[in-house]
Amino acid sequence: MEKKNVVSIEDRIPKLKQARKKKANRRLILYLSIFFFLITIIVYLQSPLSHVKTIVINGNIILDDAEIMNESGLIKNTSIWTINKEKMKTVLEKDPIIQSANVKRKLPWTVEITVKEQRLIGFIKQKNDYYPLLANGSVLKDRNQSIPKGEAPILFSFTEQEQIQKISDELHKLPHDIINLISEIHWEPTKTNKNKIILYMNDGYTVSGQCGTSRIRCSCIRQSLVN
Image 1 (spheres, rainbow, N blue to C red):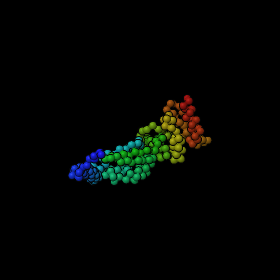
Image 2: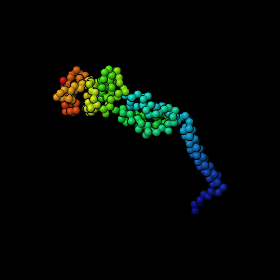
Image 3: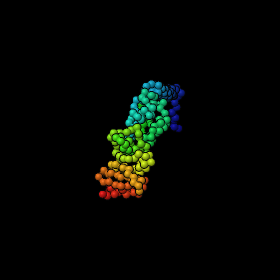
Image 4: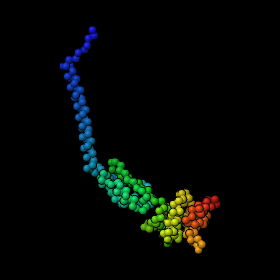
């Protein structure tokens, strides 16, 4: 008969004790790791380490960084966890220039604000000033410029809001590369055509059209390109 190896209790006890000790040590290390991790989080939350130190702003062309920061109410040395992102987004989107806004936390201390501004489609010329015109028909009266800054046509004799809304609606339908071909747009109504406009192109051509009629508007642009 085959003999079986018999291990006495005295031989097994040291091995059992050693296994239990290793298991207890692993458990202790786990508990200590969790403890120190929680302590680190508490220290981070309660200390200046969690304060906003960097503010990154993306997507702005018309508005400068300082204006967006001022409107958002965000300041440095504020805890990054006390920031109400949705409230900040709502406040920013009340600005007529901002179409949409998004706010993100980037640990450990950075806040990123990304805005999408209304499309700049022209400048209204009044006396010696130029006023930016947005795609939604808004004229930025508080942002007059002595020299227009931006690639958009200059609009002359547009004094009525109805006229401005019509031309903004028309320009908004055009792609950027077509708008960039237009240097100036003059509102020159006649007795027979109250919506007559004259377009002066960057290539030196002059095009006559009618604001508010898509078919005529498109044929005017094609005429300039063909010439």
